[in-house]
Image 1 (tube, rainbow, N blue to C red):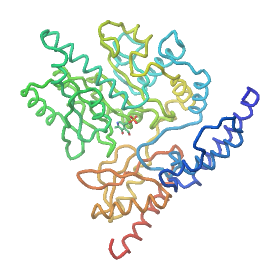
Image 2: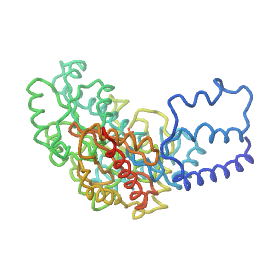
Image 3: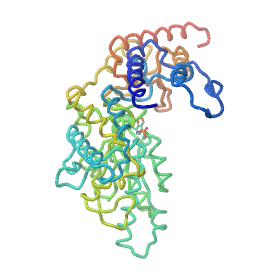
Image 4: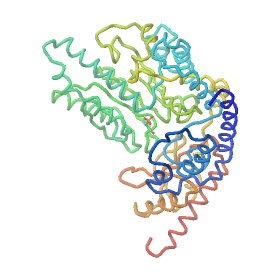
Amino acid sequence: MDAEEFRRRGMEMVDYVANYLENIEQRPVYPDVEPGYLRSLIPTEAPLEPDNYDDIIKDVDRVIMPGVTHWHSPYFFAYFPAATSYPALLADMLCGAIGCIGFSWAASPACTELETVMLDWLGKMLNLPEHFIAGTHGHGGGVIQSTASEATLVTLLAARCKAVRRVQASNPEKSEAEILSKLVAYTSEQAHCSVERASLIGGAMIKKVPTDNNYAVGGDMFKKMLEEDKAAGLIPFYFCATLGTTASCAFDRITELGPICNKENIWMHIDAAYAGSAFICPEFRPLLNGIEFADSFNFNPHKWLLINFDCSTMWYVLYVYILWDTKTCLTKGELLIFFSHWGIPLGRRFRSLKMWFVFRMYGIQGLQHVGLAKEFESLVRADKRFEICAEVIMGLVCFRLKGSNRLNELLLKRITKSREIHLVPCQLSGRFVLRFAICARTTDSRHIQQAWRHITQLTFEILQEPNH
Ligand SMILES: Cc1ncc(COP(=O)(O)O)c(C=O)c1O
């Protein structure tokens, strides 16, 4: 493909994408295919001779689209949102064109510098404490990771390194292996499974702290576990708090947990993968109070801030050890030149372009909208056959039919089979619960009302059946 053809095909692709997104509502949100559907639709080997571009595009419609779950359909209410917007798509195209591997300032000065400034812009939008902002005299700064899982792993590894050094400083006779075998990390029993996975990869024991009636961890229960573990000779070193849990959007009480962590030399990481974006709204910012006690903080603008996957922003207070060069003291300035020291991969895309385009095209006010979940909650509350299962704080409603888990499983099965709307379940206190998350940028009141009509219609049909 030469530049001339690229121009032509590029315009066609922009048309294709705009048509796809503007008409997505007409597609069934959930695909009607069985596992393995795709293999039989394409050859078993790559072509020896070049294929024709028109044939490739035809195959997008024949092979790919039938197997796509349409995350940007206004009838997609599953998981948490995946953000998208036209400015972010355009910026991603430019990122692909520049195609740099921005691991250091010299490898692409604009890539390194824009990322630092964008993390400062976003940090200020969230009103983060000054020590997280790179353009100040503080010790911290922000960086883009691919995912929240990666951010958790990176912070756990850094915390592990810090703990080993601290213990060895006062007990030089202790080997690293001996210390590692005693380290213990903590998180909520409601935390995302990526926290447990980080501890497995990081070779550290992890304990789950029980939650209260709101599915949140408070200080008392954590303190009790700490005392028991310290008495047993273990070394607590890391606590991953969640702001906005995956199941029910619960908020750990970081104003209680933070001072405990600081006093006990425990690294407090805050995983706000979903909820973090909402902290740019003044009415939600109080939920981030306690951030001043944290060593690191992460959330995914690619969930809820109109920036396409991947863009997971992480801030941390820098210490002299950072992941890959634990013996050398690096200054903040040096670290800001070598972003590769802040995460696992050496190679990094120019992802901050997406942030820059979106923040400028929307402005902060254009991003401050949260509301439709309350409308859905009112519909559920008005129907006595249903119950709300957790407080609705942001864009997630956890609800269920009063009755058995089996009944709710059946309702969800019918919803999925209908392919008109898409939801996923969770377990709360042993109960099967349906999660209704407001996801697409284009979802409005009309879609919420339609989704509820659909759910109540299926409910009516199920309740008519003799052995429901
Ligand atoms: C609270 C929380 N943490 C972590 C994750 C994992 O996110 P990622 O896919 O960015 O690793 C999720 C996913 O939804 C989440 O809700």
